[in-house]
Image 1 (cartoon, one colour):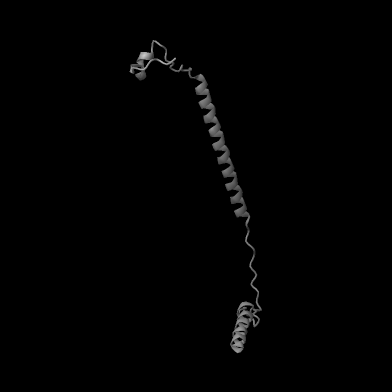
Image 2: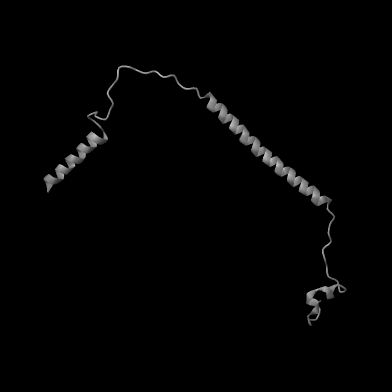
Length: 109
């Protein structure tokens, strides 16, 4: 039993050493003597696009906020300009117009 355990332990250790840690170097690419130099790409255009989109987003947000403020202000002006409507308050003279007045109940005090 001990021999089987040691054989399995040896297989696991060899797998870890050669496949995971790659101590034999089999997964590395061979070293090439020629070096291809490639100039770096300019990212200035991306930065300009990002700034333009950020400015557009901010202007749209501020524009929506200003439009909402203007609509709220115009609604307040319309409400203030509209005449106040007096609510209906039943009096003894108009009480008979109400549906409850036809009931046989005595009027409440």
